[in-house]
Length: 97
Image (cartoon, rainbow, N blue to C red):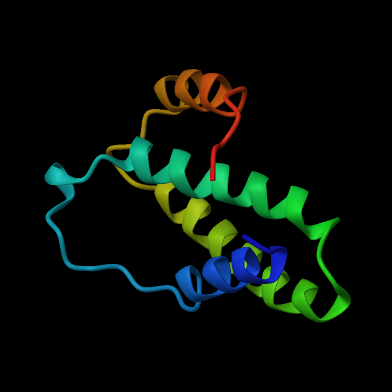
């Protein structure tokens, strides 16, 4: 997969900020925080490898993903200690694909 295709997939995924109306008690905020935080980490690494035109789309996606990370940090079901344990272990794993 080329870098442009990866940038395009991130840009489509983080096109806008939209949250669905799910009851708070059923939401695993740690999972979503980790997911978006790992995507931000990957996008920041990818930022150094892509062409100049793709950088703008990637920067917009990073901005939206950062806002989602902040949203999940403020969620009432978010537990920082638990999330950091999983995040620190997950970022050491090499991503395949």
